[in-house]
Image (tube, rainbow, N blue to C red):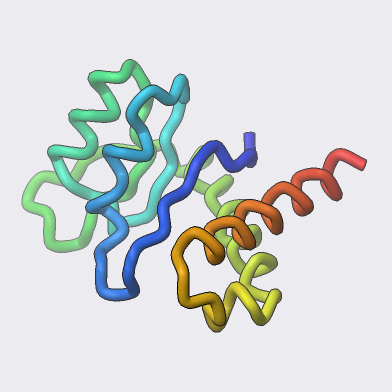
Length: 120
């Protein structure tokens, strides 16, 4: 738990949910934890087809509220803390690199070094 499996770099105006399916394809996750921004019937059905449990709280404007495990959802703070640590590096937070490949390689390197620090 808490390991980066894969990531995608998109423009700042692109909604995160548009990349969710592509990132989940082929993953062998038992549980997928996400915030309210990922609450869509299509994504939840996709996660369930992969025989995983979707732990995504429903948005307030939903007519039918879907149940989710609040205890497991609390583990999402690990993800948020990870991104906060990642953004402490100025080069990542401000996206100095113009080329996507260079930016992605810096993000991957920082993620690897962060995991290596956790193991050591």
